[in-house]
Image (tube, rainbow, N blue to C red):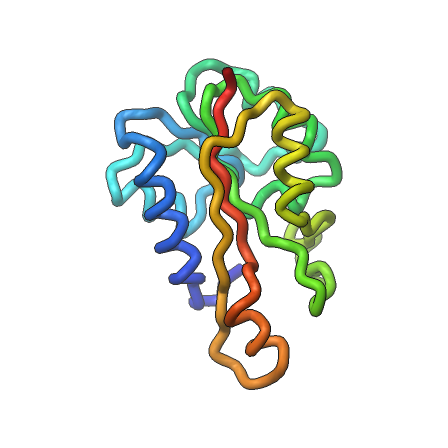
Length: 173
């Protein structure tokens, strides 16, 4: 997917955020197959288990367990037609999730070669907050951050100061 080019800034920002809200003793279920970031988490000392590529729109049983303290979902929910179902069914008491924000100057991402690498949703922050709250989560911490790219053009300039990602730490009361 990244073809040797990892989103280093996003990974560093996400790791710092996770370090602030989750202890390394907690068991994490990371939604999505094993990936470079889940490997970084493991190397950092987190106890991470990844899902196996289930279609989370249709199969939410993987999150219906109290075996994990935390569910993480880094850039997962935008790929689902109905993220509400899986978010509602999570039994862990903590959720750390990130999403790409909808940008007014760019259309939703769609890979022409990989049907799983498409965004059905690109949320505004308030929409994601509402989705989490409606599914029974209380947001404790949130951050937005930019993702500048090393290219020339109007969109790269806009990306240098327009927030692209939104990170949320939420709990079930």
